[in-house]
Image 1 (cartoon, rainbow, N blue to C red):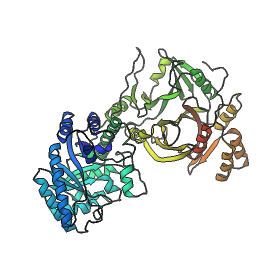
Image 2 (image 1 turned 30 degrees about the horizontal axis):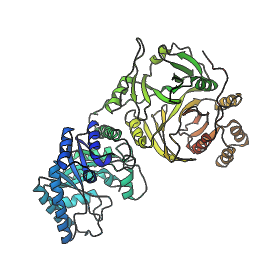
Image 3 (image 1 turned 120 degrees about the vertical axis):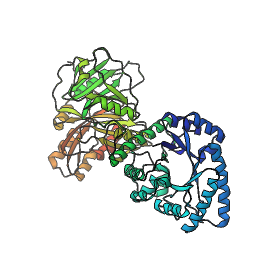
Image 4 (image 1 turned 135 degrees about the vertical axis):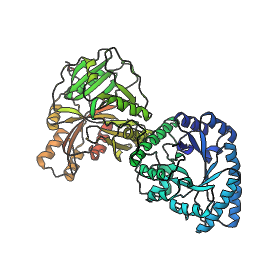
Length: 604
């Protein structure tokens, strides 16, 4: 179907919005009236700009508080409408959105509403314009889509039809199955928005928290499947009111919106049992490696050595070291000592059953492919950029071809066996984009978004995982007032974390994040673990959590640059991330950190 977006959904001037929307590949736009009123270009010039960019102007909106009014108010409303019709002719658009009346003066009379909307449709027909009538979920008397449809049917005019808005339908808990009673040719327009499931006033929910399909909790695929079954063949248009989107980069937001529509089309095809328009989703099986870039590789190496890793290889053509323990692999990309970049996580290798197909799907969902300079004989790795700039490499799960470039020796065996999860930090305006990316591109399952206290604000986090739990990502943003981006970290799975903690505590230099005694006093109140267990946790600086499925023990290292390590042990079927302990960890990280080890760097 034709893909459109309302100009209110992205930031910037109207001309900036049109250019970004066109670059993202949309077919058309809804012109939001405020964008027109604030634009220095005339309607004719806007029309020419849109046409030059290959965009149609599919809708002009909104026209408010028209129907079910007194005769005097009706005359004023028709005068307003005539003016809008002339503007629309100059813009070159033939569809106007009319919202259900929210005015206290509106009359609760469906027959009157139908009579007046019919009159409006007759006037619109004189200009070659159609009216799409939409039920606002906070409408004075008409607040459901089926009520709006009954009025449209009563009015019985060819230039009057229904506009379906997914937010107004799903936010009220209305059954979208009723859409199928509406003939497809009487659905004039379809607007799409997702939203997190919040318990709040519906008007404020609508105006501030809408998001693109796949970023919230609504079943948009189910709703849209009902629309398709009616025979509707008009535009699918994104209409999103969101405080973050209004401030985010215009181009990124437009691409994110297009990605959401492409992914939604696939979801609808699955509901309908038709062919998918995208390459098949391939969930990654595990982490092949995590790569750190640093100007102080010796310091990072000392920390990894303290954790039991050994340097097992040096890349044949690049300043990159391979550090391993079991199946946990860390690459250290050595930057120039005067590089402005501090230690940071720059790439993740994901084990894929079909790397080529993984990359093909990522590109189909508008993920930028990363050019790679490959030496003769070096393994070919497909790579794309994640929203935060992290490079994602798709590695063949059947063979570690990338490792051959390191001429590596056999890694040591220790208590740490693999990477358990990776936490990525995002700017505040890219959080929803990242969730959609990992959900649609990698097929990861999103967990509930949570917020935890930071000493200087809030940290917002959302976990994503594959079905087997072998790939887990935590997407974090500093949400309110926090100082800069949250740290990145790599969590390492340990089969005997107590032994690891004892060994690390015995080192001459502190490598572990100190945890306040107050935490352990509270832990005793939360869990009855026995005196000996509580004493052991306190002495070793281990943190603890438990759910219905199992237990979780974890500890943190000091931070180097923006990166720290977490050592975790999952007991039983524990699936979480120890979020109850995160506020304590954040407070401890804001305190002055001890120095990292200064001893000799382990080598091969």
